[in-house]
Length: 264
Image (cartoon, rainbow, N blue to C red):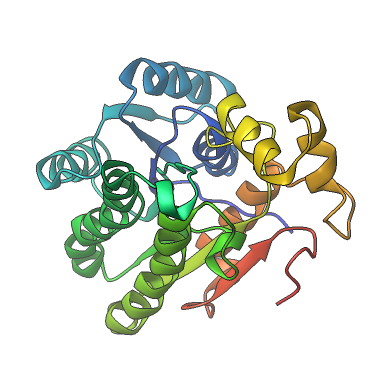
């Protein structure tokens, strides 16, 4: 199945590195022009340069704090100014502070909810007017397998990842009449290539599980029926399909990419 996104423009938040970078590259490989939106502008510029070089598409790096409405509005304005339209939004920027419930710092809760949930809301709101005007568009919210079954020591991440699925379902009902589709993608454990699975996060997981940090990857791989961890390419492949015409009758759905770990 050949998927072409040539002539389309995609905004991918958090795409300077990790899963977002992989999604941006997957969309570019199918021909989409990319707005590489990230708080880390140097990383975004490098990612955009590599995308343009490797796939022959246009790639625009933009610095954005997704928790700031003015920043999001500026990204939308730059995207439309540069490319004339916005066909795809991938809400991906996120953080995952991990603390036991009694010790979870309020400021870390607030930051995670602001980035992971409010940020998705502001970006969805920011592109909606343009997509309604075009009478076309696709929004993908990157959730997590934690969005269907919460994990210990992850109160804010759990709440936000459940929440972004609800946002997508509601937006689907609002925007369908305008030709805009909205879906959620729920990755499994991306221990290699994800910004969330930092060494500190792995150490916290090891402490929680009572194992050594160097045993964390093997532990999580053994929880997966397919016997391996999720890759950024696995996620990008599904995103590319869902935003393409091949998925033109799919909206309001949530898709696990977890090797069968949750099986729901």
